[in-house]
Image 1 (cartoon, rainbow, N blue to C red):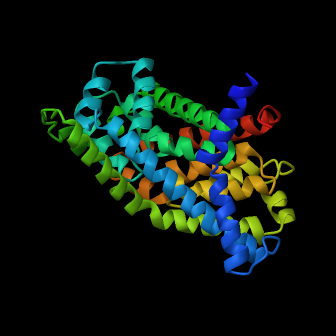
Image 2: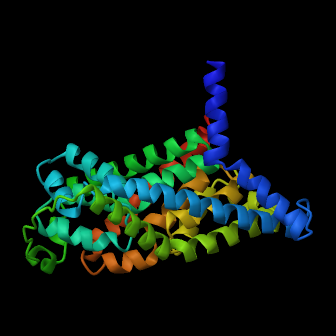
Image 3: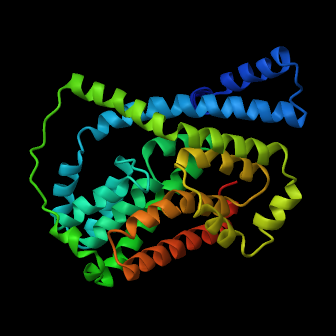
Length: 338
């Protein structure tokens, strides 16, 4: 067991945490740039270069692998899978399929319209709408790289629970009438699912890497820049006062700070990393990340075009409460994650 544990630790350090990259960037900063790692400038430069390269490497590799898997689950197949299952099973399947389809909160809206017009249960559709931007397998790998396996698993599990419960609540409230009428009138055309060859799937995976990295790179750079600033320049006393465990409103503040920000989860991870390093509770950090990815203002504006105010308000309230419960719960149980 000791040998297996040692091998796993080495693989985790070299392939997920990329210690080799950390050491290379440290040499670059100190030997080439002539900056000491103990200074704010040196630490910030190292943080920015190391995190940026690490995220892009992991993101590209994971998107390529996951996209190959996702090529077996086009929207048409997803609709057929969800259409045949009602009740809580539909919510569970909707949330799990959201993990396999990494759309940002805005790009999930057209999929939402397609699902509703196809007659899928509203609750299952909202479970998908919550989980799709909040969780995906590439983000899971990045979370494990940054925070360890335990936190990565916890984020995915609680994210799926928020999506499932949120969809169940909306289904129980019977809010179908609050979807805009034109959405129901959209003709759901039957599209034949094209079977792709191995070569086609590889090409699809390559194009997905180009597309997703091309869309998220500005958010990654901004996120890493903010993370470097927090990590090396913002006094820990200020962070602890606003978002520390001593402030009972820390999760509430983190959630509402995250809502106006429109960013992909990959851009929030470096900020979360810096906040954790400053002593912010893991529950507070998770609430921030979920708020950013699920309820950004642009996505809520787009959603308001397809659902009426009562359903939009219900979605916001249910999701916000779910995120806050998760945040406070994880903070209360944080001793389990140390």
